[in-house]
Length: 540
Image (tube, rainbow, N blue to C red; front, side, top):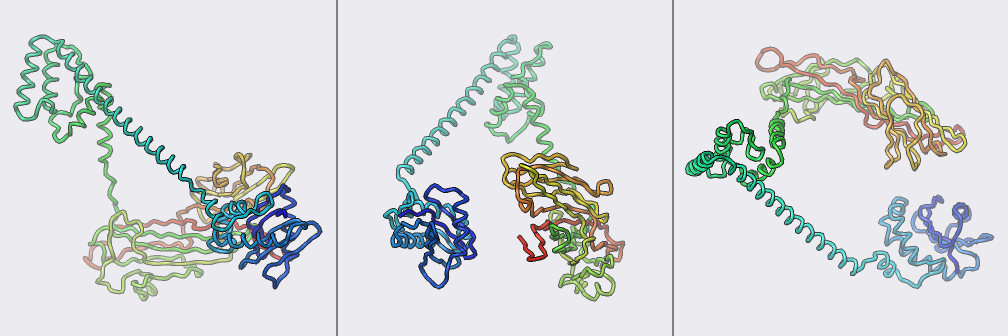
């Protein structure tokens, strides 16, 4: 008995998992598995098919086939026993018996197959033994990890003790240096120093407080007759009369002073910078109109999907400005369908494009400036099959020449919008190194982890409505460079919606100040992986 391979296939013949147990080329095993769907029959629970060289023993499992490829000299009874054992193992490792479940647990199935079949021969094992072998739990390994972790924790404790000892020795050395410098003065200096220390300690601050240190330094610098004080004894300005500092903080500052003055002085501007407040918003009312673009372009030209969804949101900071109505102007595009919020008055909007609550005595919700979402007032949607409405078209031309694939990509932008922060992401086949970019209008970046080439253009306006990029990669199928995804933003809208006026309902004064923001962004914008063949259309 020799089992050549054990495989799991879909009913359509797609190979999901295959494990070979003898030496054979990839072309041979692919040919054997490709021939199986043409030979398979129906209506049998356990079936086999023989060809001139091999025998196929298979077992249907829901929408899948569990297949053994053996030589013709193999014992069919032993093959069926092996197939029966494998059919019990597959449900043990796959949470669902479909393509997704098999692909997600492919390696677990391969390991289990290896425990059942070795060099083409069946091992005398059960399902429970296979699961135990694949788990590979070891008491010695767990014990080793516990010992290793205890050593790591012990090393961390020793490191902390050593660090505290080093800090303590630095502080002691700093105090000794300070005492030696002070003792170099005259007797009159020492007397005044001791008197100042005693008087400051009697006042209740203690010899180690900020007042004591400042007084001692002042007396020393006054009576040293122009002698430059040492950096270890000259505290920085601003430390006097600072109450509430802990002893640990003072020790840390003393250790820093021992290394130089500039270390302490650098701390001051950082504290000032951290207190810089965020500027408050200037406009009490903000209206944000945003449109999200969903476009799917065909690889060979044309549009598969074009959908624009827009929202108008309101943000009010102060409660006194909440009793208002918003008058808007639309671009008059008949293809755009507007829909107001359920709390909005439909009559006001239908008669005068005014957005107001059904109850005029009810105020709009208010919130802080951090509430970027605001309150939704209006939604609209537009769908079209007109290719001229597309703001950016992408054309990709892969061509194989020798041992290289030349890929030329070009974009053409509509004059309707100035596009900002444009990023065109092109998927690539698995590469060992970055692609060779020979020409580009803009900048590029290669994401090796996801195998994606990103083409970036900061701004597309009248100066660069079209551009191109060309790069070279090893030989690859043309479908490997699709789908191409695009993201960008623009300041204009398809709806051309504008806020004309804010109408106050209370107070009778001038309308409050407001600001309007417009933004067009892409939600899903891509060039699909589509092949259009007139005789038998096919989509990938």
